[in-house]
Amino acid sequence: MKAILHAYLIPDYKGYLFGKRGQHLRLPPEERAMLRRLIAELERVTKQLSEIDKVVAQQALDDPRALKLMTIPA
Image 1 (cartoon, rainbow, N blue to C red):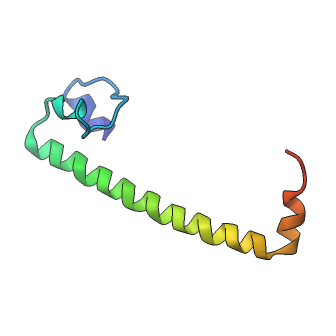
Image 2 (cartoon, one colour; image 1 turned 180 degrees about the vertical axis):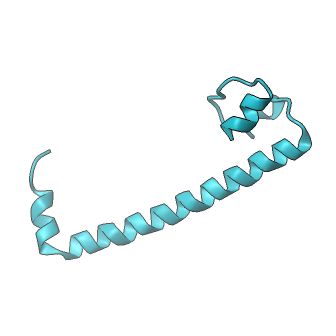
């Protein structure tokens, strides 16, 4: 994503690319479509990682050894 913005001399964008302010970025339609696909892929992977985190957390709660480790202050 950064490569596409860099190619069009757009500095690192701190906001949401497809929010109201992000819509004002001047990109060709094919580049904007590529960014949408990349963001969709990022959202898909983030959702998968969230689901994996839930499974791992549940496994930790079911394991007495992990519960004991959780009582150690950080």
